[in-house]
Length: 319
Length: 308
Image (cartoon, rainbow over all chains, first blue to last red; front, side, top):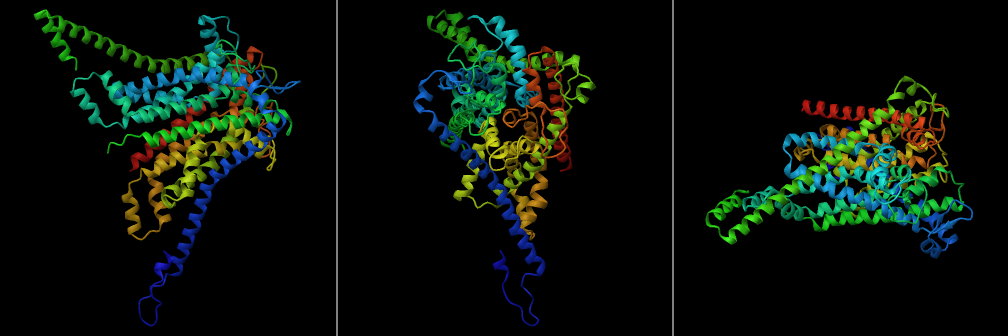
């Protein structure tokens, strides 16, 4: 820009085309601002780098102390006790259990709500339902945790669960409420994908005599599949990462079980639990937080990358 | 849509044809499935609504006995009859206020750079964009680990203080601010920019005088959304010592602290059931604060939309 403006050096009476002092300063300010904005953009990269660095080193030290074989074959997880035991399987089954229940609630119900809002609801109904779902999405997780622990578990699970006694903590209460927490996000992402399907496809199918259900399942669903799949993957990722609800409602006792009526510990709720107990820096307990954290970060990163890829690769382009 | 099916029913009745009566049966099955599908969809919405209202009503009923001014003015205490939430309210205001005042300029700056200045298609720009997308999906508890390793201990060594809590909340909400601000900036019509540039304004003048003012409603909405997220966040602060027993209000960045969500967590997981009542009352306070924020967001949006 500055180069283009220094056209002709003015001599005697000719018009002065040199940038004035004011303009030159203007352009310097312009450059400085652009540089500052670039630095802002770099901050997020620095944060990611900090995440990776902070996880990798202690996690590597952890696996130097604890053989990988024990980590993945033993079925007892008691890293903060003496003698410490480091079989990660109870955390994995706990995570699978809570995640499975949550996804079973969030994905079908979220999809159902999305179909209803996008294809069935009248504009006025929609105008009421959308903000209500947004309110649900804005409820803090600690509030959901309280609700799971003091309402869902005693009032619903303990009364109506047919398979055995349920204690004060259960994977079922935690999973159900995590599912409800994810539901609005799932619904809103799926609805966005459905809204992107052109109206002509809808009208064409209706004109051929399809019912609204058939439009939903045979036209909208396949056309919006990429967005729906991405939303589903994101639902998995959020279910795995949820900490506070699980810590409150499923307790902090790592059990090697797939019985949803029992209390369990997940990878994320272990991190929260161990973090409360202020582990001394450098102790094996402290490093365990990072080993499990690295595992959690790795899994969610893979899921997020898959979600982004799905959207990019399988997006139906109609225009 | 069901008209052809009904016509075929009439035809079947008139002719008694076996084939068309089969057709009618099929149409009946189809209608049944349509109805069942509709009911399933409505149930999904009802599930969300019923849960929300049950949660609100149950919490209100549980917390009502302790919902008074003592709750707000008393400090946390081991004796439930005297315990309140004052230090947690101030801790939350400190942490969230600081996090907002750092993450908003930083996030909007990033969004402006990516939308208005960044050379499109360069590898480092793609890296930054991909990075922000992924950062938004990192579980919040992982941010707590980073805070523990880098800020509370390790290189910064800031300890369990307001400063380190605020810093981790800043990083946590940064991707949300960036993503929502980018959307708001992208929604500004290109003609605004073209007009401004054609009149001789520089790019920054265009951004400052045209693009940012027109995207204020979108940016404000996204920012308030991220502030609400910071206000309700609990998992990362578990690792940053916010669960401590704090009976004083923070007086600076190096002060010890607790925040409202974590005091709720503490009261909720206490063995004494009187504390659960207190937790429910504190939840109502937290929800009212969130409601106030969201109302502010709606008001800002409406006011700016009217002006245009």
